[in-house]
Length: 342
Image 1 (cartoon, rainbow, N blue to C red):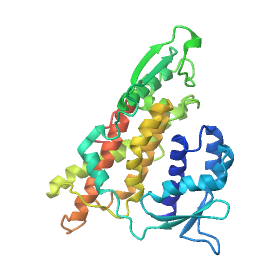
Image 2: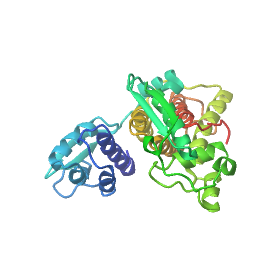
Image 3: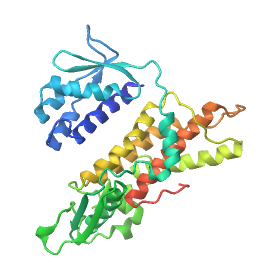
Image 4: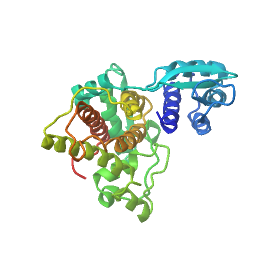
């Protein structure tokens, strides 16, 4: 596990603990600001483990809890993360992390995703609850409500979407696009949906200028939707190319892919949090994270030169296919196509 991967793991655990209510009801804005100050670095002289983080000290103020109490919660959650062998609490609440010498991740997870297909991450966690979305007559509200409807139903919720008769009846009012913008005509259905869903509902979508709109259509790495769709298409291409070489995916652990495995394992929680918090942007951002973890891992999936397909190649292909399944499933819930060719 690299320092960057470890840092992302720490931030992911912190956000998950907050989302799960481990620290009670907290102000999201305050937590977001605190998260930006979290660092993962080599321990100071006399410290333990391979790395240390100040996460508990930073989260203590916005949660109103003692740093040591925060550290105890985070240590239990970090101890179960791929690639981390041990977590120790030192001083007022520093977390010292010892990395596993070799974290062989995810065979059971990959097999689960491949077995469930697009239904991976779906659950009945919200069975019996009603998600009542009353929205204004506005494009962004409609797009957000449609996505939340699909996400909510994936978690077993009874979803009702209606246009509110009176302004005071509105339960979902995302910041609208600029008046007169028909983004579906300007960008097409998929790019328009992404432009409206990727920002948090309380944030302004970047669609006002021609430059902003061009960025949503750009076929380059700076465009997050392009990265997500390109990563998905690459997994499909790998499956086709492997078939041409005479092999298919097979079960085995793949060392060195901890970040990708962790992102795939997080997907069910992200879906549930998106439904509970009326936040489809959480799903959109998570798909970008999956794509960014996946793309660097695709270079050695297929045999190189005169190499013959091995168990390692079959295992890497299985992991890539599982990631492609998650990307396609998430895009579908957002109402966006997942093409096999980009």
